[in-house]
Amino acid sequence: MENLIAYIFIALVVGVFGYIEFTRGPAPYRGRSCTGRAWKKAFPTYSKENIRLFLLCLVDGMALSDKTKLKFHPNDQAIDVYRSLYGGKTPIGDNLELETFFENLVNGFKVEESSLQKVWHENITLGELYEFVSA
Image (cartoon, rainbow, N blue to C red; front, side, top):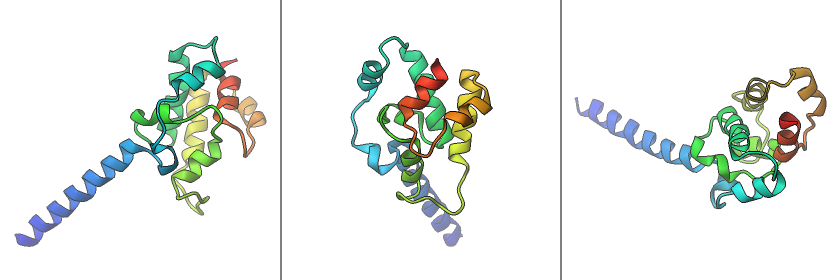
């Protein structure tokens, strides 16, 4: 019985710390203030709702909390956001975060997968992606 209580306690502690990390987002982006102004400055003719939809596609694809969506800047590279999930490295195996982000953009913005594949390159920024899917 004592072992069971210890295991439950450890699971709770790990769960709490995991949740805190989840809601804080990747380390390189945690200290940022809201980037909403940067998005509106970069895309003044687009609605906040449309920008937020894009950012929700990103955080959902990267398995991040919705609370982190305005930590990302239009100049951030998609690959850097992805790598930040793995300590700055490209992992050998992953949870298909980039692929899920890609799929979210296809479904959320009703763009052709093939046309999105054509503009995709390793150093593409979030702003470039947003501009493409919102056109």
